[in-house]
Amino acid sequence: MAILEIRHLSKSFGQHQVLKDIDFTVNPGDVTSIIGASGSGKSTLLRCINLLETPSSGEILYHGKNVAGRGINAPEYRSHVGMVFQSFNLFNNMTVLENCMVGQIKVLKRSKEEARQNALLYLDKVGMAPYINAKPRQISGGQKQRVAIARALAMNPEMLLFDEPTSALDPEMVGEVLTVMQQLAKEGMTMLVVTHEMAFAKDVSNHVVYMADGVICEQGTPEALFGNPQKQETKDFLSRFNKL
Amino acid sequence: MEKLIQLATDIGKLWAKYGSSYLAGIRSTLVLALVATAIGCVIGFFCGVLNTIPYGPNDPPVKKFFLKLIRAIVRVYVEVFRGTPMVLQAVFLYYGLPYFTDGNLRFDSVWAAAILVVSINTGAYMAESVRGGIISVDPGQTEGAKAIGMTHVQTMVNVILPQALRNIMPQIGNNFIINVKDTSVMFIIGFPDFFAAHRAAVGASYLYFPSATVEMAGYLCMTLVASFLLRALEKKMDGASDYELVQEDPLVMTAGTYSHPNRAPFGEQNREV
Image 1: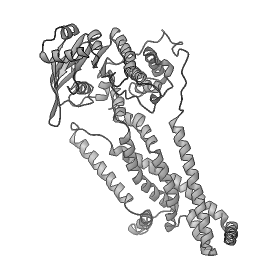
Image 2 (image 1 turned 135 degrees about the vertical axis):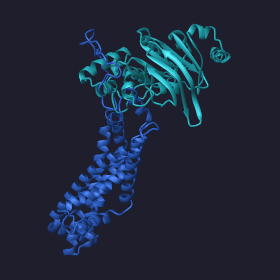
Image 3 (image 1 turned 45 degrees about the horizontal axis):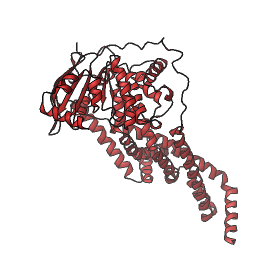
Image 4 (image 1 turned 120 degrees about the horizontal axis):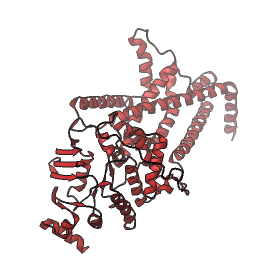
C-alpha cells in the first residue's frame, strides 16, 4: 500500500496559483526526485506535503488518511515524515547532539539516555559523531546538512522529504551530503527529494517527477524520463542541463 | 581647590550622620529594581508570547476572536503604561485604591505598591522588546521545530524563546539600569530608596550640593557595576567559542547492541495538541 498519495493538490498564494492539480504516489522504499526550473512549484509542493503550507484544495493521503483536511494532528503527522531544508534550520541554541535529541525527548517522550543513544547512532551514520559538542555556527554547511539529516532520522520517520538539500552548499561540500543520501536510499529509506542534482535524480532515484509552471509535466522511471522524454518542455529542460 | 576641600569635608559630615541611611537607600533601590525588572520580564514574556500566537485562515472563528481580543488587551496595556509617567502611575494606584473602596482596600506597604508600579511599567516596555526578539529569530528555526513534530508551545519553549532571550538581553539590561535610576520617583509615595535618603539628609542639613554629589556618585556606581555584570552574563550565555572533538567512538559501548525503538503507528498515539 502506498505511504503517500497526492490527489488533485492545488495551492494559491492570493491570485497566484503555484500548484495546479498535482497527482502522484509514493510507495514504501521509493526514492522520488522532483526536478524542474526555479519557480515551478517544487518546494511549495514539498512544503504542502509536510503541511508547512496549507493546500488550497485537494487531498494528501497518508496511509489512506487525508491529512490536508481539518481536525488533523499536524505535529504528530510531521513527526512521522521528516524534512531536511535547503537552509538546514538547525537549532542555533543547541549543540549538535542536543539538536538530534530534543525532538525525541519532547515529541516522542523518549528517555534522555534512549534519545542520546539513538542520536549518536545516526550522527555516527552521517559521520558527525566527533562533533557532537559543537554548536551549529561552528561547523561547515555540509556538516550542518548532515546533522540535519541525522536529526530527521533520529525521529525514526517513515519517509524523508528533502528540499534542495545541496543548493546552499559550496561545490566541494555537495558530495558529502549526496553520499549520505545515497547510502540512505540503498538502505531502503523512502525519500522524496526536490533537487537540481540531475546525476542524483538519474542514478539514485527510481521515480522522477518533472514539474513546470505548477503542474507535473511528466513523470516516470529515470531511464524513461532522461532517456526518452515525451514532452517538448522536458526535452528543452534536460537539454539545457546537458549543455552545462 | 579650597572648594573641593570644602566639598570633601561636607560629604564627610553628611556621611558620618546619614551614611547608614544612604546605604539602606542603596539597598532598597537595588532590591526594588531587581525584583521589578524580574517581574517585568515575566510580564513582558507572557505578553510577547500571547502576541505572537499564530492563526491561519483554517482556524475556527472562536480561536481567531480570542487571539484578536488578547492582542487588543495587551496593546491597550502597553500603550497606557508606556504612555504615562511612572510617577503619576504610582500616585494614581497608591491613592486611587483607597479612594474607590472608601479606604477598605489600601496598600499595606509602600514596597508592594512600588514593586507593582515599576513591574507593570517594565512589563509594558518588555512586551514590545520580547515581540521584537521573537520576530528576529529566523523563521527557519520555527520550521525546523515544526518539521520534527513539535507543537507551538514546544517550539516556543525549546527553540524560539531561548534565542529570543539572548537577543533581548541588552534590552533587559537597559531596563534594569533605567529602573535603578527611575525608581527614584517612588519617593512620591514615601518609598525609602536612595533618593529619599538624599531628601531626608538635605531636609535636616541643608547641604544640597554635597548630598547631590553623593547621589550622583552612588547611582553611577550602581549602574556601572550592573553594566559590567550584564556584559559578563551575556558572554556566559554565548557559551564557549570552541568545542571539543570526541575522539573515541561514542558508540563503542553500545555498538551492535542497540536497536532503535519502534514507533506507534500514525493516529494511535495519545498526545497533546
